Image (cartoon, rainbow, N blue to C red; front, top):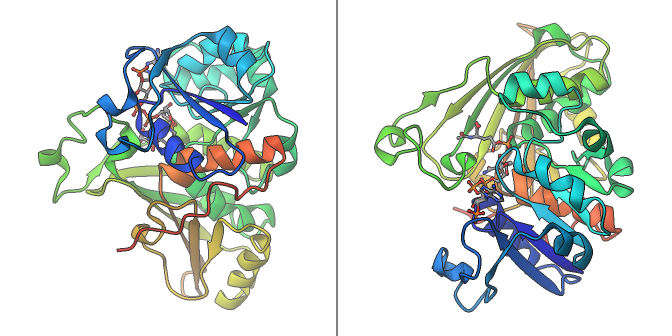
Length: 344
Ligand SMILES: NC(=O)C1=CN([C@@H]2O[C@H](COP(=O)(O)OP(=O)(O)OC[C@H]3O[C@@H](n4cnc5c(N)ncnc54)[C@H](OP(=O)(O)O)[C@@H]3O)[C@@H](O)[C@H]2O)C=CC1
Ligand SMILES: CC(=O)N[C@@H](CCC(=O)OP(=O)(O)O)C(=O)O
């Protein structure tokens, strides 16, 4: 299988290379850049010396569409919206890591992203790539919209309870923490070491663009779903997300029965590990495609606390993108993704 990566000089792009190198059916990985064509990728990333010898190529939609089996778009919002029309004319399957095709309602995209939305005809062709819950649709897709990093952690954590109608949807509160690589490779005042180290910052309160993405999925899963409270924080780590979800229960389940609901929901899904005991730490999934989950029921408050952790660059971006490409192309979903976490 021949693979192309647009945005290979970014964090999502180099993570794709790391994973694709382990994939037994990938015969070629080509890398594309809008600013560094003809440069070897090692001039930006010396850690790839003797590992990846390819040079960056200029972006040519026709070549991408017709000479590759899979094209990963790992560029900022707006780029995929522009490229996808041309790409869809060729034979390549496309996995877009940005938010351009995740939201079905154009007005919602424009309100939360503050930019023009992609053509509705393109968005309509896109399948939302939450691998564990949308496998059937992904299997036949030509264009997959890879979910956001926070929505992946949050939706995997909430799905079993929401889909079975076991929580009061109006009571759901989501509190999440992430590391600096979530913001990509370009430094900013919020990710500057001296601002972020030994600190913790709340940001984009009630305005984060992942809010409507989470709400869109919850509304598909439950007629009771409405607006949610989602509060992100930046903490001093490079990779990782921890999402803590609180919800009031509408069932009579005890803590053990809750765990059984979750174990059952994910028993066929190797990348979602429901813990038997104890809440997971972000470090425990570092560098892997796992999302680890644990939950506890408090009979005093009748509330459930669900914690879900993942590596934002793997299960939150490149890993899930490869998992989706595998599903689209009929490979085993785990192909290229069997690395276990780097610990400690
Ligand atoms: N970082 C994360 O944890 C996650 C990121 N995402 C999404 O994945 C995408 C990539 O993120 P990330 O790798 O972190 O971002 P980076 O900022 O690290 O890299 C983005 C890359 O996009 C390329 N690019 C910029 N402008 C254009 C353009 N006009 N046309 C083509 N390519 C362009 C740049 O490469 P060059 O200059 O060489 O063209 C750049 O290296 C984003 O949409 C992001 O929101 C999704 C989930 C998680
Ligand atoms: C620290 C930081 O800024 N993180 C980013 C992560 C979002 C991201 O990566 O965007 P998509 O998943 O939608 O593409 C943020 O909160 O906006």
